[in-house]
Image: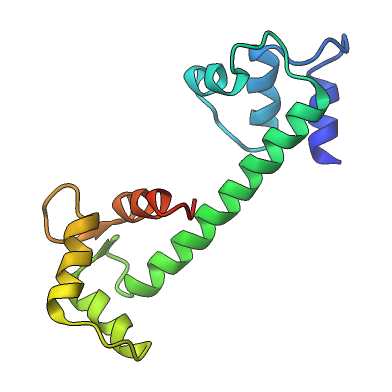
Length: 136
């Protein structure tokens, strides 16, 4: 219902949403797409119809929900709220879960996600590796 309302508010001429209308409608729903994001979402179309908008926003809302859940999961590793997962954090969670991973396997996991080379995994690095894994 909220999605439909946003569509109709920003499509008064019932021609479909152009790029400006799409951006405004998304903002009204709590998203903040850049102009480049909107261009990508438009996919060479001049307008997006109501059904396309519904599908797009359902996907965006699902993606936001998944990212929120991943942030909560990140917090389970980052008990101290430092915004980083260190080897000790990963080891603690693995032990709590009763998993049997070697120190080398744990370090390999850290190295795989650690793009800036600081030996820890930031939230952005964590989300990036989850994206590669298809989880967001």
